[in-house]
Length: 159
Image (cartoon, rainbow, N blue to C red; front, side, top):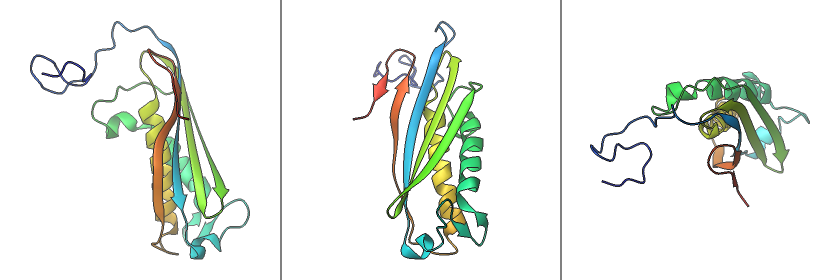
């Protein structure tokens, strides 16, 4: 058995939720990113602050969906702990033909919020696709990744 995998019981090889009962709570934050590449048909609907699609205001809907998803991460990812996330902020900016989504989550707890940040950014990107697919299906979601995390055993910052 590989004893390096935190979600695998080293004796049985079965998956299990990591036992955090003995860990001490710390302030924890995480920021994740997703990028949505948009074709000209969608970019033509940009009004300087949002995209108007047949379904409504795209970015505001994506922000709401991303926050809602981040809060429900333990229901979507089987071995995530229910953590009572204390803060979630999603910012969406435009750069040329792309929307860049940053989701930052934070709390004071025994385990981190990386999966919540990644889920929030991912679902915000999926919502943009859903809101804009009536304009074009030539939309690409890319570069979903953790940018930084603090708290717990190790901090991380992507270069």
